Image (tube, rainbow, N blue to C red):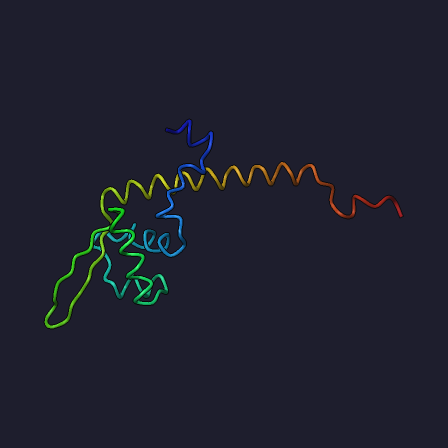
Length: 125
């Protein structure tokens, strides 16, 4: 897989993770072994209840996360966990993103080396 990743890393950019809010959710969950509550994720990612619910549904359908819904006293509590498949998929996504960014940086550096600076376009004064 690494050969195809280096040949065309764009094909490995998993769309379910590439959306900025889902990227924030997955990044937040990456270090949360005990999971995060809905409220914690909402605050960390700066999302509304509706937006967070919609993105969690998409990630759950992709089997990237697991939701645990229960009552604590009389109040409902949803805790979100990163699923094993989600962790593996997100790591692969991050590796692909790193390859894409590396390629872009190298291309820009090569182009910068070829393009003369503005002051260099003018002849001696």
